[in-house]
Amino acid sequence: MNDQAGADPLGGIAAFVRAAEALSFVAAGRALGISASAVGKTVARLERSLGVRLFHRTTRRVTLTEEGRHFYASCRRALDELDEARATLSAAAERPRGRLRVSLPAIGYRFLLPVLPEFAQRYPEVELDLDFNDRLVDVIEGGFDAVIRSGTLSDSSLLARRLGPFRFKLCATPGYLAAAGTPRTLRELVAHACVRYRFPTTGKLQPWALADDGGEPPDLRTAMTCNNMEALRGAVMAGFGIGYMPDFLVRDAIEAGQLVPVLDAHCKAPGQFSILWPSSRQLSPKLRVFVDFACARLFQEV
Image 1 (spheres, rainbow, N blue to C red):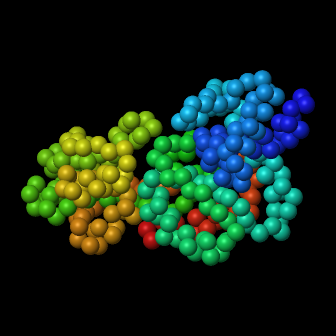
Image 2: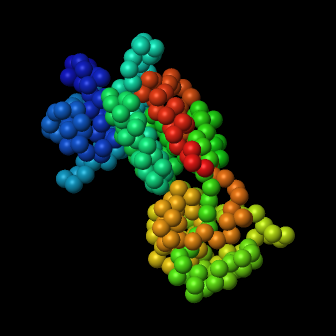
């Protein structure tokens, strides 16, 4: 263990974690303020000291080995615990500062970005690192401080606070409704082309939670499926058919007359987003103020 990685284990681990997150020695070096070559040499020393290969390297890319993936998860937890220990020492007096990694669904920018200037004004020393992704992420292994998700909460290792509710709307363009007719009952949806959202993680179609008028909602005729809500909105606005979307995604288009709500009385089931973070982690000042801000400012118009 006379290797330099052994002499500076934290430096080697920090370089490895940055490289593992970016899958790039260049990006890791940029984040650490050193050259890509220095990152590569540091990681190589760490591999020699451990006796395992952590990355597969080609001239075009680097990827984690199986051992590298397991080691990254352990290192990420260890670094998080070190960060937590530092934060706990002065949490009461410390000003919120530092990088805050948050994962959101792809449409999260619609409800979050409009209020972020206010957050930045209040907490100028917090650097937000936002990941907009419709696929579910592992909060701890992904190195996230928090995630914002909709639907049922099932992960008992996470703490959560509910954000304000939102509602879904059935919408179509005036041109589509002029050509196909406007449905007045749920049964009339059978005659219409429906644009459906498919969950990217499970592959299942999103159910349309509609209050029925005496019978079961009809089988929907699916004209198109999308695994991204923005793409679904674009398909509906192109006249493909009727779509079922969150109100915050279609509010501007409805106000501009580009989309028309239909069967509004049947769209009663509210949607719900929550903000979640690891239960094993103390609320650092930067996370605490973000959670409080999100709960106070998001979905307050419903």
